[in-house]
Amino acid sequence: MHVSNEPIDPVRIGFVGVGGMGTNHIKNLVRMPGVRITALCDICEAHATRAGQIVQEAGQPVPTLYTRGENDFERLCAEEELDLVYTATPWEWHTRVSVAAMENGKHAATEVPAAITLDECWQLVETAERTGHYCFMPENCCYDRTEMLILNMVRQGVLGELLHAECGYQHDLRSLLLGDDGESLWRLAHGEERNGDLYPTHGVGPVAQWMNINRGNRFTRLVSMGTQSLGLNLYASKQFGPDSPEARRRYAQSDIVTTLIQTAMAQTVMIKHDTLSPRPYSRGILLQGTAGIVRKYPEEKIHLEGRTVGDVWEPLEAYQEEFEHPLWKQTMEELKDVGGHGNMDYLVDYRLIQCLRAGVEPDIDVYDAVTWRAISALSEQSIARGSQPIDFPDFTRGRWQDRPPLGIVTA
Image (cartoon, rainbow, N blue to C red; front, side, top):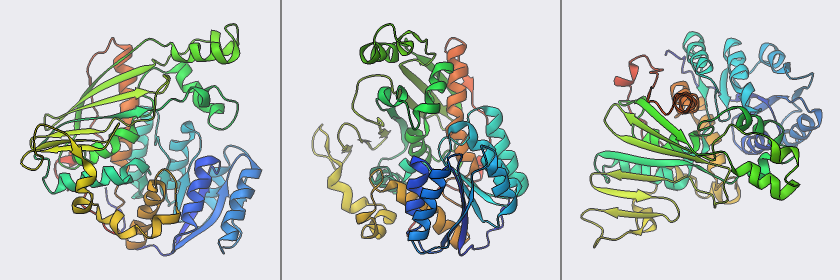
């Protein structure tokens, strides 16, 4: 895919969807040099006005507001002079907004997930290739401190040849899904109608970068299986009563979905989606190589052949200073008062702006965005077919064999 890599400074941004996550991104972006937020779009005028006040309080001109309904993003993309359109809307709008941005000569950034169906995945790829514009998915977990430390260790060969990884999204969302505001207004519908791994990118994004997926390696096939669907009904029965609509409703989503993926390099990746059970938060991170193993949950531990004494785990913290990722090391002072999911929210926005201002390709491109997201649609297919293996599409059309791995970036 050919993209004109001319530096952009300042980066003029139009933002679509400024509810919870959208507002968080706005707060990050107005702190950064070389950013101008010139247009805001939301179906709720109060949300757009609130975000506009944040922009104005940061010393920027009042942005133009687009609040004429759910399709007003099309007018923003067509009429505004922008370099980037960033969206944090409900999932089903992500592809539409991104395509509209690229078709109108802007780069696109879309909150996870970039797409829902395989057709949408291909639409993003083909639009990006045809227009020569980026489609970036800000997967914040790729910028978490531990995941980046592991990436640095992998690049330095500390774990040897990679063999197997485990990851996932294990987060009790029952109260959120059965709430009456925010994401509850649209997210529950996906679990009512779909059965698969609905949210794989937080776990698999860092794993894909460690294993050079789309950059010398690729996912080749997938198999998924799911448990019974019990969690939401039991929770609703306790909260609202056994005869409540929430307790009597049928939910398609399995309480736990487990997916196994094989790569072209004969590695395996196990992904677990578990959002309907009582449990502490985890992304289940584990990486096994020929020279050692590292994990993140429930504690950050590592075992390295030739360095760890005995057949035991040792704290990963012991290797923090030696293998701290340069991006974290160089931005530590700046991150002290940022917050947002352990600062990774800020770093994902920081890197996107840094890349656009420098005229270099973002760390996460359209092929990454759709590959990580396609796991959802493929897992649904596998479960619907009795857990049959499903071939993984090659969204790069063979270019993965020649594309260089993601390097160790700096600030």
